[in-house]
Figure (tube, rainbow, N blue to C red):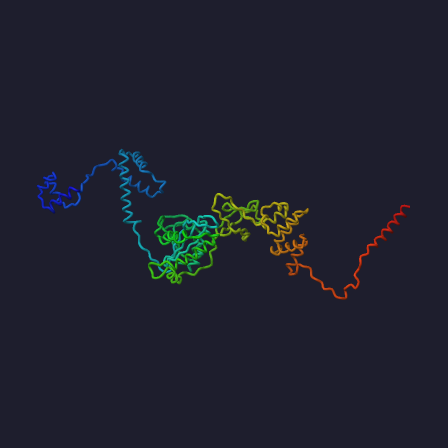
Length: 512
């Protein structure tokens, strides 16, 4: 290239003859004429097409490379494996020729992607109230003194770009349903269309093109809120790029500045407040005003929010002989009458509801523990075991469910178990909560303990007085003046001596 530049300067700038340039360079005059006539700035060398042993297998290798490009990284065949497969088909060339072909194929594919297909996008515009976008993300926060991994639900209105975040511990159906209600509540209504990726809680099976087998519970939730569902193509996050960008922005707008929280509820309250504050701070970009200004105009186009969707996930569980059902490594008590029988377990984000025979049997707060280093917890309700201890009162002394008795019942138990038959009497007192209000029974027990007579009869008497609205203290009697004693009686113990004399006389007569 340097020699060509010298020839061009001598011929065009210094006006030297071709003979003189040939003498100085040692090149033939025909070669110099060819360079000058071509007008080329840099030399180009034509590489002749040479036959290769790989030519017969080029199409096969290109198909293999295209197939491998669509596989996960850990499942792709290496170029050495492709070379070995070609050798098995009769290829006699070297590995280096196969590797060079693979490198050239990858370069051509990257250029193709940059100029068409995934490398080119169309800007999107949405009407007011037309659509919202949803996505999950994983973030961390300090909750209850521990660093907790959170599953965060992101919602974003496509027109006003108002966004909402809510954190959970799991990415399950009940969490998804709860997130939709709170998002629509904060955003002021329901858009006409929701845009999702192919998450497992919404799509049971991905078919060809836009064909999807939608989860039945997710479809019921969408029908309840009356919005249409649209799913992106697989691995096509740009089809809901607004919420994808919101996931990135939330990390430095919210999570990097997040304080410590006592509970998950306080964290979600903080997220809701911060989202609304950021609406007023962030300019919309495409429309005049902030996100909050455009959102206030968009709320008129949103559908009204219906009552919350009953978003539970139902499991059929068999109650153990110890009156417990298992869920997520934890155990929850069930009334003893359902032991060894199947029940329906309805799982909500914050509670567990047990149903059987078409009725709600009991309810417990839900325990979620993401740590696998700790054992599962057991949640008891001592009332569920009253039918058992009525037959086996001895189990009251060391029964695990009764470690959580109210303080008044514990004091009464300590007093009664000191006496013979006290365990059965204690069981009969506890059984009163099955027919009467528990607070009334507790009040009667406390009054009996204060009176120093904690017995079943006295507690029953006090309980009936409380139920009838009578005072538990005995009434004071105001005696009339006519009944007052004018002379107080005096105890005369000397009268008993006369009785002793008469008894002695009778014994003497009998002896004679």
